[in-house]
Amino acid sequence: MLGRVLLTLDGIMLLFGAYMADWNETHIHNPRWPPHAKFHNAQTMTLSVILGAATLFFTWRTNASAQMAKESFRIAGFLGSIYWVAGWASLLYPDTDGLDPEFGGPGFPQKYPFTAAIGLAVTGLYLEGAFRCEGDDGMLGLRME
Image (cartoon, rainbow, N blue to C red):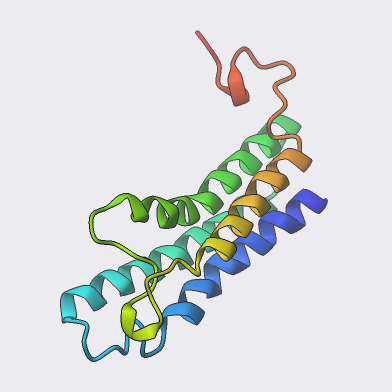
């Protein structure tokens, strides 16, 4: 049950986190940002909501079997991690940073919530037994045929 709670917290962070961080003068209401930059910010915020809803759906849906429940948790953990991993990966692109100079940058203040959210998802998966492969032919429940 604790694993479900952790995945739920991750899903809630996805539902609200991007809007809490970006619905202000640093992002969507920043007059220095061109419309195309705001488009991508809006796309990112919307993606976060979709991933959050999907994470919660797969965390709490009714499953017909223990194996199906394990697969649901795996899907929830995967979906609940995508946004946060993408946030870290964005630092690999040229001339990117987590904070604009006009707001105190350079810097990456997102590192703490992004890392915490990944930790919630992975720990939730572990506690729900989603990494165990009893009765499976392959790693993480993937059948090798």
